[in-house]
Amino acid sequence: MDKLLILAVLVSFLIPVLIMPFWIRKAKQIGLIWEDMHKVGHPKNVAGSGGIIVVMGFMLGILIYVAAKVFSFNSFGNVVEILAILCCILFMALIAFVDDLFGWHKGGLSIRSRLLLTLFAAIPLIVINVGDSTMWGINFGLLFPLVIVPIAVVGATTTYNFLAGYNGLEAIQGVIILGALSIVTYVTGNPWLSVVALCMVAALIGFYFFNKKPAKVFPGNVLTYSVGALIAAIAIIGNIEKIAIFFFIPYILETILKSRGKLKKQSFGKLNDDGSLEVPYDKIYGLEHLAIWILKRIKPSKKVYENEVTWMIHGFTIVIILVGFLIFF
Image (cartoon, rainbow, N blue to C red; front, side, top):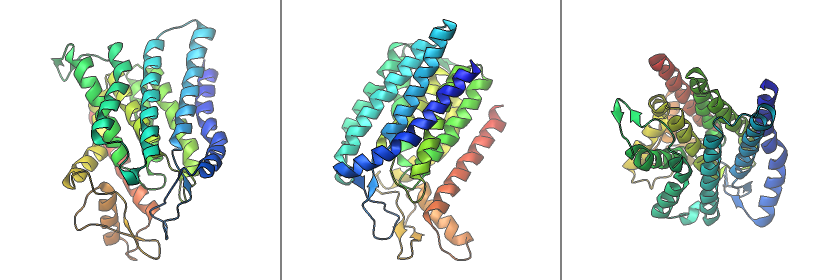
């Protein structure tokens, strides 16, 4: 079984590594290319929606795991929950891909359409009544699957999409948070959820090789929506909502800061001719802007670059997760 688990994770990693070059080439052929906002001249030559290959790798890895359980061990334990997660992620990826095709420059899907469609993506989790309806000492009964589950899916999906726009940012954030959740689910007696999380971690690592600075491909909403939905699903099914919310503190802060600008201020920094970044507004409207502001005050050169901003945010997320482990374990 251990070898089969390794194979599932390995396939999730290899699919982006092997297929992404073909996606990049094809995306450029059909004009699915976006601007790299933190490079001088804003070159419009980066393939878009690479997250679709990440989702493909994740799903194939999970299906190998399910096949191993069914054919090798005649075990159907948690298969229904796994298939519900896959349906949720697939639905979310489809919604996000449509949003990507509409283009963020043109506003993509309207906020109302986005919220409504992501609510539908929660239906696979609702119909199988996942999770424990008792949370924080309160039994929510039917309100849990009918209200709390869709709110959690929509909330995690939307907020995960806010902290984005820098080479490598979304991918490594997903690796950090899902990696931490895989440890939590293993410790709390749900190792199958650890496998689910690790398959996405492996796919994100494979994707990062192409998304790190200078990016050859952008994740698009396909990746951010899918990762956000997966985090919500793991938290709900594993009954680890409290620690998952704690791990999500960077995204809660990002949402609060974005709300100051009525969700209309972009996360991008103001680009200088030498490739360094400045805070683009008079106020801070995101953790990205806060990272630029802090780095400009602690670096002797006063020059802040894109990869420094991303790794400062990653560092902050790691600190939050370590504090979470200390508090909850």
